Length: 239
Image (cartoon, rainbow, N blue to C red; front, top):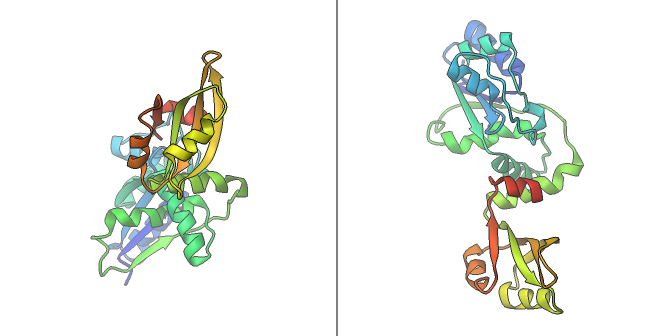
């Protein structure tokens, strides 16, 4: 009876439904149970809030271990009754914590297992002095996904930015950009010509890792460019 809060990820709701049912009925009914989903794949949270089964039209599968379009009827009823709070976390925050766990602690976790860690920032004041249990289960890791995870980690830290820049088709254009815009600590992590508008110029997709994006904006004034926002459809298509 010394556990105050249990936090776990929700996909279809079976794991946290079972834990919440057992805790509330058999072990410690005053223990708080919190369920976590990714912000673009929160079918259970939406279903509980609207008191009916919700099927997502656009289900984000980045955190594939918990990407469920529609919760089951049985798990919905159990989670609605026994889980005290539902939270969502961003994919980029989860990626940040996944890399942090690997680099700082040498622990490799499935992305869905990271979500309980990622939600702690949202409830940091509530858990002071409490005994908190995080449920971290699963071993569905795809090494091919690591580059995307690391990119999302940098985006979360505001260190990785993507731009579409108009480059003139003439020798030395990239060299001038590197010398006049970038700092010695900046790094180009992607450079790709998009479809050309005419023979004299073309649009370039460029990804830059930097610690000072405002300085980049100031130095890029002589260029025609668009900064891509992570939430834009164009970002999802091109990046």
